[in-house]
Image (cartoon, rainbow, N blue to C red; front, top):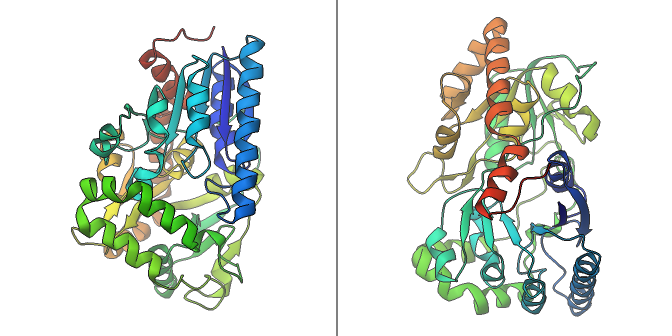
Length: 381
């Protein structure tokens, strides 16, 4: 089977999705449209994006003519994928799937092009009624992970807590409190030591006008005025300051960037790997929204002991209490950190159990086989 993947370059997509299709036995050609899921909204940026769409269409047509195109699998928003390009891809008469991994925060960003895909595979089940109103066919496909190849011969020992991820405000607040409580803590991530703002925090007027034009009515239908107003207020607020040294955490807690090759050694060497599912709203209130992330599969898959924040989807995908430990609020988190730091044998038992569970239920191989069944396509030999 020949699969064309349409992805961001770098990051998690090629190493998870393209690699997952390859491990299933497929021949994969990757088309990269940039390093993030948006585009520059300047006139020059729009021209460059139009060229990218032309290149994508030319690539798909070439593969079709060569007899090397059985499935198009994309992770792409309307910002990048033009409606006319989606129509022309649809005209190739090849099964098409767009994978949407952030329905809690940005469900609406595939409303213009999603109807041209056979399925929009969704990592969550929120806002499906809004997708269906736009003529989209959603299909539930939670995130997953690829099993590690071979065994890690080295680890990076750490008898405390390790957090690998982004410096979102709630995460910084929780981690800062853990540090104040004297809990041994090391934090890794690309943006913790930034001295300038992330470009993604800036919403140029061109994008705001585009969103109002194309998404206002469907968002009001799905979310009501309150949900849309929350987005507007968030965009009008000044962007948060970069989370550099001295903001909330002691400098010794922040390690910053780590190479991809260190992921497994860091995870396996840590006594506790910490996870968050909080996404929006005030923590502990009915307005709070939580969402699973890729880390919720990656860390258990490689055998790390994982203490992640509870959420409804997590309870659907894992038998909580048997093979995964969760926390709900700060006091609960502190108690469980102290308990599991003092009980290494129990940590090892749980980590092994949850790893085996992931190998059975949460690999990309499993996800893609079920997707092919949904599309009524043959399984690769």
